[in-house]
Length: 348
Image (tube, rainbow, N blue to C red; front, top):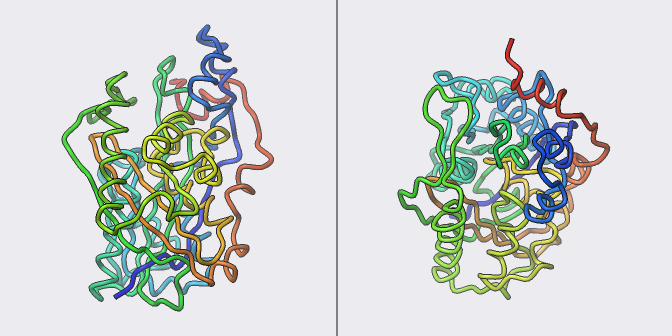
């Protein structure tokens, strides 16, 4: 039985802070940082926004884009590393808000920045087995970075949602296959009760990001007998602008192939929403028949790779919900003081 994307939606808060405004507070060189990270600014959640509200907005956009009856959604999975509750699922809030309750299953996923794509894989299994008509997988975060830490320059807010189904006439993209590569590599972590994550510094690249992204990507291409030349576009997890470009080159993908989905310079790293946001930006521009390769990465560590083939239905639904480019447009900029207030860095 085929399985694929029936619809997708994204949400990005309107607020932004420029890297130079963060650097000014900590006495860092903004030009060197921007050049090294290849990130110019990042999104910031509003005072009334969190992972749950972002997930709801993304899910509603996905439902609107394809006119999906929410009562058909029988699985709701929200992946995040900034769930608002330590004990209380985000996914039940989402399910209630999109009117998918009560006849459904819901759960929250955690696997750093690939928790959302793990949700896609779970939905694939449920709809292929016939246990669910449709499933929705969401990657959303209001990611954290300690004041003055390197993460503060990229940790952003946003999310993307994907409705997964098995009816070929409804699919905007067929999921040709998926492959995961996972090891116990503690390159990034946050202990219970700690407000900010810690990271292994130089170990984040190797043996973290590059080993697992290339392992998953090569594993999938070997599995289905494809090569970079078989794809029109590619998306890789975007912790910054440098890593996805470097790993694309390592794997044999060109700058032109990754350009449509490379949104991190104007968005920052939306963690669980990062790769999924890049896929959404790519679908916003894709043509019927295009093939898209994507690999998400989650610290801890693992990679999820996917091969998509876009169908004719993309042209019918694409313009019925906000595109990523529209969500990035007309930002409202804030200084560090307001940013710190929005992110709860100022404690009373």
